[in-house]
Length: 424
Ligand code: LLP
Image (cartoon, rainbow, N blue to C red; front, top):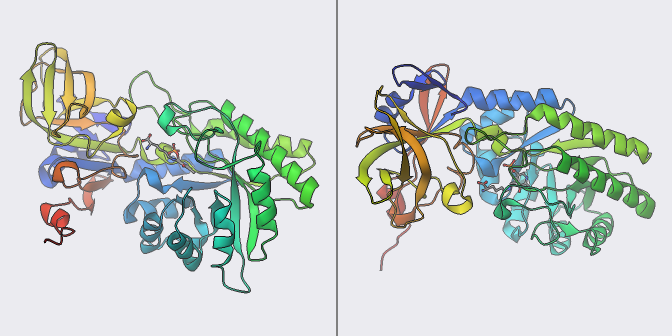
Protein backbone atom coordinates (compact mmCIF):
# COMPACT_ATOMS: atom_id res chain seq x y z
CA UNK A 1 0.00 0.00 0.00
CA UNK A 2 1.26 3.45 -0.94
CA UNK A 3 1.08 4.76 2.58
CA UNK A 4 2.07 1.57 4.48
CA UNK A 5 5.46 0.53 5.80
CA UNK A 6 6.47 -3.13 6.04
CA UNK A 7 8.66 -4.84 8.62
CA UNK A 8 10.54 -8.18 8.19
CA UNK A 9 8.32 -9.74 10.82
CA UNK A 10 5.17 -9.27 8.73
CA UNK A 11 4.27 -6.13 10.61
CA UNK A 12 2.73 -3.34 8.64
CA UNK A 13 2.26 0.17 9.90
CA UNK A 14 0.35 3.17 8.62
CA UNK A 15 1.02 6.59 10.08
CA UNK A 16 3.30 4.88 12.60
CA UNK A 17 0.51 2.63 13.93
CA UNK A 18 0.58 -1.17 13.69
CA UNK A 19 -2.33 -2.34 11.52
CA UNK A 20 -2.84 -5.49 13.59
CA UNK A 21 -3.29 -3.32 16.65
CA UNK A 22 -5.93 -1.30 14.82
CA UNK A 23 -7.74 -4.49 13.76
CA UNK A 24 -7.78 -5.67 17.36
CA UNK A 25 -8.77 -2.37 18.91
CA UNK A 26 -11.42 -1.22 16.42
CA UNK A 27 -12.52 -4.55 14.94
CA UNK A 28 -12.80 -5.49 11.28
CA UNK A 29 -13.63 -4.57 8.63
CA UNK A 30 -12.22 -1.09 9.21
CA UNK A 31 -11.17 1.78 6.99
CA UNK A 32 -7.86 3.32 8.07
CA UNK A 33 -7.09 6.84 6.85
CA UNK A 34 -3.59 8.28 7.09
CA UNK A 35 -4.14 11.93 7.97
CA UNK A 36 -0.51 12.84 7.34
CA UNK A 37 -0.65 11.33 3.87
CA UNK A 38 -3.83 13.26 3.02
CA UNK A 39 -2.18 16.48 4.20
CA UNK A 40 0.99 15.81 2.19
CA UNK A 41 -1.07 15.20 -0.95
CA UNK A 42 -2.90 18.49 -0.42
CA UNK A 43 0.47 20.24 -0.05
CA UNK A 44 1.80 18.57 -3.22
CA UNK A 45 -1.09 20.03 -5.18
CA UNK A 46 -0.66 23.49 -3.72
CA UNK A 47 3.09 23.45 -4.40
CA UNK A 48 2.60 22.17 -7.96
CA UNK A 49 0.00 24.80 -8.85
CA UNK A 50 0.70 28.02 -6.99
CA UNK A 51 -2.11 30.48 -7.54
CA UNK A 52 -4.59 27.80 -8.59
CA UNK A 53 -7.53 26.81 -6.40
CA UNK A 54 -7.54 23.15 -5.40
CA UNK A 55 -11.09 22.08 -4.55
CA UNK A 56 -11.08 18.56 -3.10
CA UNK A 57 -13.90 16.44 -4.58
CA UNK A 58 -15.76 15.38 -1.45
CA UNK A 59 -17.53 12.48 -3.19
CA UNK A 60 -14.27 10.51 -3.00
CA UNK A 61 -14.29 10.48 0.81
CA UNK A 62 -15.91 12.84 3.26
CA UNK A 63 -16.45 13.01 6.97
CA UNK A 64 -16.05 15.96 9.32
CA UNK A 65 -12.41 15.10 10.08
CA UNK A 66 -11.56 14.97 6.37
CA UNK A 67 -13.24 18.33 5.79
CA UNK A 68 -11.14 19.82 8.59
CA UNK A 69 -7.90 18.38 7.16
CA UNK A 70 -8.43 19.72 3.64
CA UNK A 71 -9.67 23.07 4.93
CA UNK A 72 -6.61 23.52 7.12
CA UNK A 73 -4.38 22.68 4.14
CA UNK A 74 -5.93 25.59 2.27
CA UNK A 75 -8.05 23.62 -0.18
CA UNK A 76 -11.57 24.35 -1.33
CA UNK A 77 -14.30 21.71 -1.54
CA UNK A 78 -16.43 20.36 -4.36
CA UNK A 79 -19.73 18.93 -3.11
CA UNK A 80 -22.46 17.33 -5.21
CA UNK A 81 -25.37 16.92 -2.83
CA UNK A 82 -27.11 18.59 0.08
CA UNK A 83 -25.72 15.77 2.25
CA UNK A 84 -22.09 16.52 1.38
CA UNK A 85 -22.78 20.22 1.85
CA UNK A 86 -24.24 19.54 5.31
CA UNK A 87 -21.18 17.52 6.40
CA UNK A 88 -18.84 20.24 5.15
CA UNK A 89 -20.74 22.98 6.96
CA UNK A 90 -21.00 20.89 10.13
CA UNK A 91 -17.20 20.71 10.06
CA UNK A 92 -17.03 24.48 9.76
CA UNK A 93 -15.91 24.50 6.14
CA UNK A 94 -16.24 28.09 4.88
CA UNK A 95 -19.17 28.23 2.44
CA UNK A 96 -17.34 30.63 0.17
CA UNK A 97 -14.76 27.95 -0.58
CA UNK A 98 -17.40 25.37 -1.57
CA UNK A 99 -18.40 24.58 -5.17
CA UNK A 100 -21.80 22.90 -5.65
CA UNK A 101 -22.14 20.35 -8.45
CA UNK A 102 -24.83 18.00 -9.70
CA UNK A 103 -26.56 17.16 -12.96
CA UNK A 104 -29.95 16.97 -11.23
CA UNK A 105 -29.78 19.25 -8.22
CA UNK A 106 -33.16 19.23 -6.57
CA UNK A 107 -34.86 22.52 -5.72
CA UNK A 108 -34.09 21.72 -2.06
CA UNK A 109 -30.41 21.30 -2.85
CA UNK A 110 -30.28 24.57 -4.77
CA UNK A 111 -31.96 26.27 -1.85
CA UNK A 112 -29.49 24.77 0.63
CA UNK A 113 -26.58 25.93 -1.52
CA UNK A 114 -27.93 29.49 -1.75
CA UNK A 115 -28.91 29.64 1.94
CA UNK A 116 -25.47 28.44 3.03
CA UNK A 117 -23.83 30.92 0.67
CA UNK A 118 -21.67 28.52 -1.35
CA UNK A 119 -19.00 30.23 -3.41
CA UNK A 120 -20.09 28.86 -6.77
CA UNK A 121 -22.87 26.70 -8.15
CA UNK A 122 -22.14 24.79 -11.34
CA UNK A 123 -24.95 25.02 -13.89
CA UNK A 124 -25.44 21.65 -15.56
CA UNK A 125 -28.81 22.10 -17.30
CA UNK A 126 -30.95 24.95 -18.63
CA UNK A 127 -33.85 24.33 -16.25
CA UNK A 128 -31.87 25.17 -13.16
CA UNK A 129 -30.93 28.68 -14.29
CA UNK A 130 -34.31 30.30 -13.58
CA UNK A 131 -34.97 27.93 -10.70
CA UNK A 132 -31.73 29.06 -9.05
CA UNK A 133 -32.20 32.76 -9.83
CA UNK A 134 -35.62 32.66 -8.14
CA UNK A 135 -33.99 31.49 -4.90
CA UNK A 136 -31.37 34.24 -4.71
CA UNK A 137 -32.40 37.02 -2.29
CA UNK A 138 -33.07 40.40 -3.92
CA UNK A 139 -30.07 42.67 -3.98
CA UNK A 140 -27.59 39.77 -3.98
CA UNK A 141 -25.97 37.72 -6.73
CA UNK A 142 -25.00 34.05 -6.78
CA UNK A 143 -21.74 33.21 -8.55
CA UNK A 144 -22.06 30.34 -11.01
CA UNK A 145 -19.98 28.37 -13.49
CA UNK A 146 -21.43 26.79 -16.62
CA UNK A 147 -20.38 23.18 -17.13
CA UNK A 148 -19.65 22.52 -20.79
CA UNK A 149 -18.95 19.29 -22.64
CA UNK A 150 -15.42 19.43 -24.02
CA UNK A 151 -16.08 16.22 -26.02
CA UNK A 152 -12.83 14.58 -25.05
CA UNK A 153 -12.62 10.86 -24.53
CA UNK A 154 -10.50 10.17 -21.47
CA UNK A 155 -10.75 7.96 -18.43
CA UNK A 156 -10.10 4.40 -17.54
CA UNK A 157 -13.48 2.72 -17.46
CA UNK A 158 -16.64 3.51 -19.45
CA UNK A 159 -18.64 4.02 -16.24
CA UNK A 160 -16.35 6.82 -15.06
CA UNK A 161 -15.90 8.75 -18.32
CA UNK A 162 -17.82 11.98 -18.32
CA UNK A 163 -16.43 14.44 -20.85
CA UNK A 164 -18.13 13.22 -24.05
CA UNK A 165 -21.20 14.33 -25.99
CA UNK A 166 -22.96 11.11 -25.09
CA UNK A 167 -22.66 11.55 -21.34
CA UNK A 168 -25.31 12.99 -19.08
CA UNK A 169 -23.08 15.75 -17.68
CA UNK A 170 -22.64 19.29 -18.88
CA UNK A 171 -24.01 21.30 -21.76
CA UNK A 172 -23.12 20.61 -25.37
CA UNK A 173 -21.11 23.29 -27.14
CA UNK A 174 -21.79 21.71 -30.53
CA UNK A 175 -25.55 21.45 -29.98
CA UNK A 176 -25.69 25.06 -28.77
CA UNK A 177 -26.86 24.33 -25.22
CA UNK A 178 -23.69 25.73 -23.64
CA UNK A 179 -24.04 29.01 -25.53
CA UNK A 180 -27.70 29.20 -24.58
CA UNK A 181 -26.86 28.67 -20.91
CA UNK A 182 -24.24 31.43 -21.01
CA UNK A 183 -26.73 33.88 -22.58
CA UNK A 184 -29.43 33.02 -20.06
CA UNK A 185 -27.12 33.33 -17.06
CA UNK A 186 -25.78 36.67 -18.31
CA UNK A 187 -29.38 37.88 -18.65
CA UNK A 188 -30.16 37.00 -15.00
CA UNK A 189 -29.46 39.93 -12.68
CA UNK A 190 -29.34 37.60 -9.66
CA UNK A 191 -26.63 35.40 -11.18
CA UNK A 192 -23.01 36.26 -11.79
CA UNK A 193 -21.24 34.17 -14.42
CA UNK A 194 -17.76 33.54 -13.01
CA UNK A 195 -16.55 31.12 -15.68
CA UNK A 196 -16.69 27.71 -17.28
CA UNK A 197 -16.26 24.19 -15.92
CA UNK A 198 -15.57 20.77 -17.38
CA UNK A 199 -14.71 17.36 -15.98
CA UNK A 200 -13.28 14.69 -18.26
CA UNK A 201 -13.66 11.53 -16.22
CA UNK A 202 -11.58 9.57 -13.74
CA UNK A 203 -8.31 7.62 -13.58
CA UNK A 204 -6.76 9.80 -16.29
CA UNK A 205 -3.02 9.16 -16.29
CA UNK A 206 -1.84 11.72 -18.85
CA UNK A 207 -1.87 15.52 -19.03
CA UNK A 208 -2.70 15.61 -22.73
CA UNK A 209 -6.52 15.34 -22.35
CA UNK A 210 -6.40 18.25 -19.88
CA UNK A 211 -4.38 20.33 -22.34
CA UNK A 212 -7.02 19.62 -24.99
CA UNK A 213 -9.77 20.58 -22.53
CA UNK A 214 -7.90 23.82 -21.79
CA UNK A 215 -7.86 24.61 -25.52
CA UNK A 216 -11.61 23.98 -25.87
CA UNK A 217 -12.50 26.06 -22.81
CA UNK A 218 -10.25 28.99 -23.73
CA UNK A 219 -11.83 28.99 -27.21
CA UNK A 220 -15.19 29.32 -25.48
CA UNK A 221 -13.94 32.19 -23.31
CA UNK A 222 -12.87 33.96 -26.50
CA UNK A 223 -16.26 33.32 -28.11
CA UNK A 224 -18.11 34.62 -25.08
CA UNK A 225 -16.05 37.81 -25.17
CA UNK A 226 -16.92 38.25 -28.87
CA UNK A 227 -20.61 37.50 -28.44
CA UNK A 228 -21.26 39.29 -25.15
CA UNK A 229 -18.29 41.56 -24.56
CA UNK A 230 -17.53 39.96 -21.18
CA UNK A 231 -14.31 38.36 -19.99
CA UNK A 232 -15.02 35.50 -17.61
CA UNK A 233 -12.41 35.30 -14.85
CA UNK A 234 -12.43 31.55 -14.01
CA UNK A 235 -11.73 28.15 -15.57
CA UNK A 236 -12.41 24.95 -13.66
CA UNK A 237 -10.91 21.86 -15.29
CA UNK A 238 -12.43 19.31 -12.88
CA UNK A 239 -10.58 16.33 -11.44
CA UNK A 240 -9.88 12.78 -12.51
CA UNK A 241 -6.15 12.47 -11.85
CA UNK A 242 -5.17 8.81 -11.75
CA UNK A 243 -3.58 6.99 -8.83
CA UNK A 244 -1.70 3.68 -8.81
CA UNK A 245 -3.88 0.95 -7.30
CA UNK A 246 -1.42 -1.90 -7.76
CA UNK A 247 2.12 -2.57 -8.92
CA UNK A 248 2.74 -1.65 -12.52
CA UNK A 249 0.12 1.12 -12.57
CA UNK A 250 1.04 4.78 -12.60
CA UNK A 251 -0.75 7.84 -11.35
CA UNK A 252 -0.80 11.44 -12.55
CA UNK A 253 1.49 13.31 -10.17
CA UNK A 254 0.34 16.86 -9.31
CA UNK A 255 3.57 18.45 -10.59
CA UNK A 256 2.72 17.24 -14.11
CA UNK A 257 -0.37 19.46 -14.04
CA UNK A 258 1.86 22.53 -14.10
CA UNK A 259 1.97 21.93 -17.88
CA UNK A 260 -1.81 22.29 -17.99
CA UNK A 261 -1.74 25.58 -16.08
CA UNK A 262 0.93 26.71 -18.51
CA UNK A 263 -1.22 25.68 -21.49
CA UNK A 264 -4.16 27.68 -20.11
CA UNK A 265 -1.99 30.80 -19.74
CA UNK A 266 -0.47 30.40 -23.22
CA UNK A 267 -3.82 29.85 -24.90
CA UNK A 268 -5.31 32.86 -23.13
CA UNK A 269 -2.35 35.04 -24.06
CA UNK A 270 -2.76 33.86 -27.67
CA UNK A 271 -6.43 34.86 -27.61
CA UNK A 272 -5.68 38.22 -26.01
CA UNK A 273 -7.39 37.19 -22.78
CA UNK A 274 -6.05 37.68 -19.25
CA UNK A 275 -4.94 34.48 -17.48
CA UNK A 276 -7.99 33.13 -15.64
CA UNK A 277 -8.19 31.95 -12.06
CA UNK A 278 -7.65 28.20 -12.45
CA UNK A 279 -9.60 25.66 -10.38
CA UNK A 280 -9.04 21.89 -10.27
CA UNK A 281 -11.01 19.26 -8.37
CA UNK A 282 -8.96 16.19 -7.47
CA UNK A 283 -10.78 13.61 -5.36
CA UNK A 284 -9.17 10.19 -5.61
CA UNK A 285 -5.63 11.57 -5.83
CA UNK A 286 -6.03 13.28 -2.44
CA UNK A 287 -7.72 10.53 -0.42
CA UNK A 288 -7.26 7.26 -2.34
CA UNK A 289 -3.70 6.24 -1.54
CA UNK A 290 -4.13 7.41 2.07
CA UNK A 291 -6.64 4.66 2.85
CA UNK A 292 -6.24 0.99 3.72
CA UNK A 293 -9.09 -1.41 4.56
CA UNK A 294 -8.56 -4.17 7.12
CA UNK A 295 -10.44 -7.47 7.04
CA UNK A 296 -10.32 -10.64 9.08
CA UNK A 297 -10.12 -13.94 7.19
CA UNK A 298 -13.19 -16.06 8.06
CA UNK A 299 -12.67 -19.12 5.88
CA UNK A 300 -10.22 -20.57 3.39
CA UNK A 301 -11.76 -22.95 0.87
CA UNK A 302 -10.13 -25.03 -1.82
CA UNK A 303 -12.25 -25.17 -4.95
CA UNK A 304 -11.67 -27.10 -8.13
CA UNK A 305 -9.76 -24.26 -9.77
CA UNK A 306 -9.15 -21.67 -7.09
CA UNK A 307 -8.52 -21.27 -3.43
CA UNK A 308 -10.99 -18.83 -1.92
CA UNK A 309 -10.13 -16.60 0.99
CA UNK A 310 -13.38 -15.28 2.43
CA UNK A 311 -13.26 -12.16 4.59
CA UNK A 312 -15.69 -10.35 6.88
CA UNK A 313 -16.42 -7.49 4.44
CA UNK A 314 -16.75 -7.27 0.68
CA UNK A 315 -18.73 -5.47 -1.99
CA UNK A 316 -20.70 -3.49 0.59
CA UNK A 317 -17.57 -1.69 1.79
CA UNK A 318 -15.63 -1.85 -1.51
CA UNK A 319 -17.90 -2.08 -4.56
CA UNK A 320 -15.13 -1.02 -6.98
CA UNK A 321 -13.87 -4.44 -8.10
CA UNK A 322 -17.44 -5.57 -8.85
CA UNK A 323 -18.44 -2.27 -10.51
CA UNK A 324 -15.33 -1.41 -12.49
CA UNK A 325 -13.21 -4.55 -12.43
CA UNK A 326 -10.64 -2.57 -10.45
CA UNK A 327 -7.63 -4.21 -8.82
CA UNK A 328 -6.34 -3.32 -5.36
CA UNK A 329 -3.17 -4.67 -3.79
CA UNK A 330 -3.99 -7.12 -0.97
CA UNK A 331 -1.50 -8.23 1.72
CA UNK A 332 -1.38 -10.42 4.79
CA UNK A 333 -0.49 -8.32 7.82
CA UNK A 334 0.79 -8.95 11.28
CA UNK A 335 2.43 -12.36 10.98
CA UNK A 336 5.67 -13.59 9.46
CA UNK A 337 5.55 -16.76 7.40
CA UNK A 338 7.98 -18.83 5.39
CA UNK A 339 5.19 -20.44 3.39
CA UNK A 340 5.40 -20.03 -0.37
CA UNK A 341 3.12 -17.64 -2.16
CA UNK A 342 0.11 -18.87 -4.17
CA UNK A 343 -2.64 -17.14 -6.09
CA UNK A 344 -5.87 -16.78 -4.16
CA UNK A 345 -9.32 -15.38 -4.87
CA UNK A 346 -10.30 -13.01 -2.10
CA UNK A 347 -14.07 -12.87 -1.70
CA UNK A 348 -16.48 -11.08 0.59
CA UNK A 349 -19.29 -12.39 2.76
CA UNK A 350 -22.17 -11.20 0.58
CA UNK A 351 -24.68 -13.41 -1.13
CA UNK A 352 -23.50 -13.09 -4.69
CA UNK A 353 -20.75 -14.40 -6.91
CA UNK A 354 -19.62 -10.95 -8.05
CA UNK A 355 -18.63 -10.16 -4.46
CA UNK A 356 -14.91 -10.45 -5.14
CA UNK A 357 -12.19 -8.19 -3.75
CA UNK A 358 -9.35 -9.66 -5.79
CA UNK A 359 -8.58 -12.42 -8.31
CA UNK A 360 -5.14 -14.03 -8.55
CA UNK A 361 -3.97 -12.40 -5.33
CA UNK A 362 -0.54 -13.67 -4.23
CA UNK A 363 -0.86 -14.65 -0.56
CA UNK A 364 1.08 -17.11 1.64
CA UNK A 365 -0.07 -20.71 1.16
CA UNK A 366 -0.65 -21.06 4.90
CA UNK A 367 -3.24 -18.27 5.03
CA UNK A 368 -5.85 -19.23 7.63
CA UNK A 369 -8.95 -18.02 9.46
CA UNK A 370 -8.13 -15.23 11.90
CA UNK A 371 -5.46 -13.70 9.68
CA UNK A 372 -5.78 -10.01 8.87
CA UNK A 373 -5.65 -8.72 5.30
CA UNK A 374 -4.97 -5.14 4.25
CA UNK A 375 -6.38 -3.84 0.97
CA UNK A 376 -4.46 -0.85 -0.32
CA UNK A 377 -5.55 2.47 -1.82
CA UNK A 378 -9.13 2.27 -0.58
CA UNK A 379 -9.30 5.87 0.65
CA UNK A 380 -11.46 7.03 -2.28
CA UNK A 381 -14.91 5.79 -3.34
CA UNK A 382 -15.02 3.00 -0.77
CA UNK A 383 -16.47 4.56 2.38
CA UNK A 384 -18.40 7.01 0.20
CA UNK A 385 -19.95 4.28 -1.97
CA UNK A 386 -20.46 1.74 0.81
CA UNK A 387 -23.87 0.13 1.07
CA UNK A 388 -25.67 -1.84 3.74
CA UNK A 389 -26.35 -4.83 1.47
CA UNK A 390 -27.44 -7.92 3.41
CA UNK A 391 -28.13 -5.58 6.37
CA UNK A 392 -24.40 -5.19 6.89
CA UNK A 393 -23.43 -2.13 8.89
CA UNK A 394 -20.77 0.09 7.32
CA UNK A 395 -17.24 -0.12 8.77
CA UNK A 396 -15.75 2.59 10.98
CA UNK A 397 -13.13 5.07 9.80
CA UNK A 398 -9.99 5.13 11.93
CA UNK A 399 -7.65 8.09 11.43
CA UNK A 400 -3.96 7.64 12.07
CA UNK A 401 -1.29 10.28 12.47
CA UNK A 402 2.01 10.57 14.30
CA UNK A 403 1.79 7.11 15.82
CA UNK A 404 -1.77 7.44 17.14
CA UNK A 405 -5.07 6.00 15.97
CA UNK A 406 -8.49 7.49 16.69
CA UNK A 407 -12.05 6.77 15.63
CA UNK A 408 -13.52 9.47 13.34
CA UNK A 409 -16.59 7.60 12.03
CA UNK A 410 -18.04 4.85 14.17
CA UNK A 411 -19.15 1.42 12.97
CA UNK A 412 -22.77 1.12 11.90
CA UNK A 413 -24.60 -1.47 13.98
CA UNK A 414 -27.87 -3.36 13.53
CA UNK A 415 -29.62 -0.72 15.70
CA UNK A 416 -28.63 1.99 13.19
CA UNK A 417 -30.00 -0.06 10.33
CA UNK A 418 -33.20 -0.99 12.18
CA UNK A 419 -33.92 2.63 13.13
CA UNK A 420 -35.33 3.36 9.68
CA UNK A 421 -37.70 0.42 9.76
CA UNK A 422 -40.81 1.90 11.34
CA UNK A 423 -42.68 -1.40 11.48
CA UNK A 424 -46.19 -2.34 10.49
N1 LLP B 1 -15.17 16.90 -10.23
C1 LLP B 1 -16.33 16.40 -10.70
C2 LLP B 1 -17.33 17.30 -11.28
C3 LLP B 1 -16.57 15.01 -10.62
O1 LLP B 1 -17.71 14.51 -11.09
C4 LLP B 1 -15.60 14.16 -10.03
C5 LLP B 1 -15.82 12.72 -9.93
C6 LLP B 1 -14.41 14.74 -9.56
C7 LLP B 1 -14.23 16.11 -9.68
C8 LLP B 1 -13.32 13.94 -8.92
O2 LLP B 1 -12.82 12.92 -9.71
P1 LLP B 1 -11.53 12.09 -9.21
O3 LLP B 1 -10.39 13.07 -9.11
O4 LLP B 1 -11.84 11.55 -7.86
O5 LLP B 1 -11.38 11.04 -10.21
N2 LLP B 1 -16.88 6.00 -8.24
C9 LLP B 1 -15.85 6.07 -9.26
C10 LLP B 1 -15.45 7.47 -9.56
C11 LLP B 1 -16.58 8.40 -9.95
C12 LLP B 1 -16.13 9.82 -10.08
C13 LLP B 1 -17.25 10.78 -10.20
N3 LLP B 1 -16.89 12.14 -10.32
C14 LLP B 1 -14.65 5.21 -8.83
O6 LLP B 1 -14.67 4.61 -7.77
O7 LLP B 1 -13.69 5.10 -9.58
